[in-house]
Image 1 (cartoon, rainbow, N blue to C red):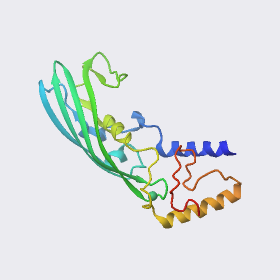
Image 2: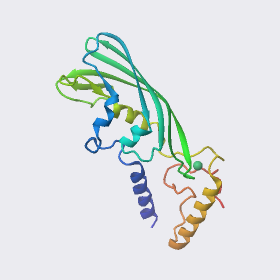
Image 3: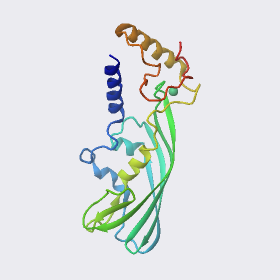
Length: 209
Ligand SMILES: [Zn+2]
């Protein structure tokens, strides 16, 4: 019974978060034309470009658990001897639902992503630091790169700071869960429903009620 419950939780988490990156086939790349960096036309030296990763961006990525977003991305690019040294500075926030009370929760995004891009025979992203793209590509679309960078900043378990959750909702959820556990005899879950998340917050308001 316990194993089945944990498995159900895992499946629920997978359904919520899905695979880290949506399948490229299911995404309309035409919606991400604003994220092109025209590498082939760049001369040696320093270049800069700005992007905005917003609510629409995550909607187009079919990422329905991210309700709002506004992340400003500034690219510093250094081209030297056919090597493109890129650093993306990301600053802003994304809004998701709190795991504990389901109210909106803003998560601050403040991160840098560094990658070296080179031209080669074929596409190769096996290395974490070097991306090889085919000579036939005059540009690099950085939409997926920015998507991965920002999504990795969202903790697996995201909750409001202690005492900031929606109390009415917590009480309702707690009643609902204790009714459910009376029905099926399960008794191993904490009030947040994430008994298997590896970290149980003893200060969950209402957890002991
Ligand atoms: Zn909350």
